Length: 58
Image (cartoon, rainbow, N blue to C red; front, side, top):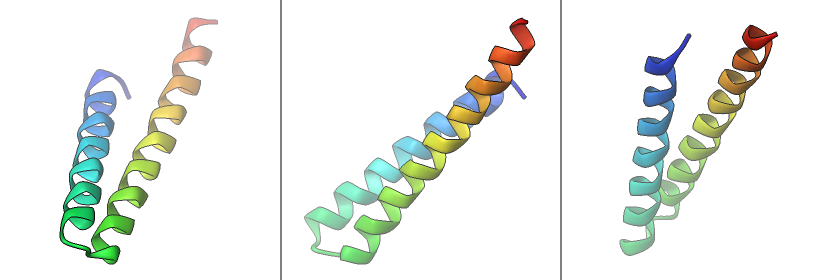
C-alpha cells in the first residue's frame, strides 16, 4: 500500500464532499449523509495508511 492508496483515499473524500454539498443544495438528506459516510470511510482508510507508514519507518 502506498501512494496510490493515499490518492484513492483523497479522491474518495473529495467525492464524499461533493455528494454532501449536492445533498445540501437539493435538500436530499440521504445524499448528504452518504457523502458524510464516504468522507468518514476515507478518513479511516487514510489513518490506516499512516499507521502502516509509521511501522515501516521503524
